Image: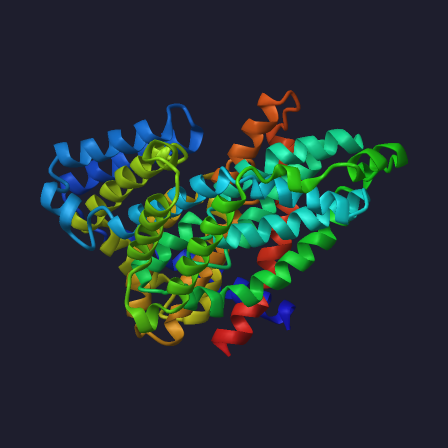
Length: 458
């Protein structure tokens, strides 16, 4: 079945690309539009190559868009379709505050030590537990935050067991990207897709979570093979790790229960969105406000863990993409793409899946999804709107989220893990990460093909 699907897709893709050239010839844009495209590509290149900080690149690109009148203040700050998506910004802000408070309780350190003891010091069993914990946490929290909290404790456990830490850090980064794909709040690209596509927390659970559960199991098996040379066992070291008391990691039990209660209410409100009719951003902000007001945590402590550069980066990116919508560039690309695929939903889905995975491997998947989401919105409408055409959103999410595992710069979590490793004296090179990431990405994306085909296209 899988071979037949791949053969059909390949036979359709080649002529579609050949047909694309004459369609592209008919794209007519104004001078302002072409300057906007040039500015966007330049800013995107700076983001991808990290020649300058991505926040500076995004803000610089947004400034150019405003300067050349590709967009204006009204469209950039207040328009629902071409401006800053405040739902995304405030959802991230609220969840960051909640996680910032949760971090002070020591719960993540507790889970890491607990998993090491439950694994009885067995290296592969330990990796499997850390993968499951990381993937599960990333489904509820931002994957960058998850690896920031799990990685330092991984150093502690690996040092105690005399294990090489790099395989565990690499596995955790990939697990966070896979697990984060399962929910609306697990990965920043999903937040953008949910906002642009009008998709709820429940939609992601129903359509993404079943696939991700399977992929996590497959990923654990892959790690057994990929990192097989790293699983050495030292009985004396195991005895030392078994002597640790994980309960000592909990710094504030009262705050822990308060934080878990608020987090549970927030997640319940996400799930009950069809009944309560509160946007996820409103729920996250309410949860953050209640947590700060009901605990002894000060405002300064609560916002200390907020990734302000990330929020500003999103804002600049939304302005740039909105300018491309305002000038008609996105509309022209959408029209050309729809004509190139001939309105064939299956071909469009498979093409979107693999192109998204490939491009997310070489550039951060956040700006990629921000750029593609208005194009996919147009393609969904061109294929009949709601209903079967919604598969295009899932193809974009799967491709972007899983493609981020392919290289060290494909996802923000990867970059964070490499930075932590370097600061702790055990640097992980670009190619050390990528040689494993390419295998994981190819396998997981390939397994997604029959899932999309069988569930949505037949």
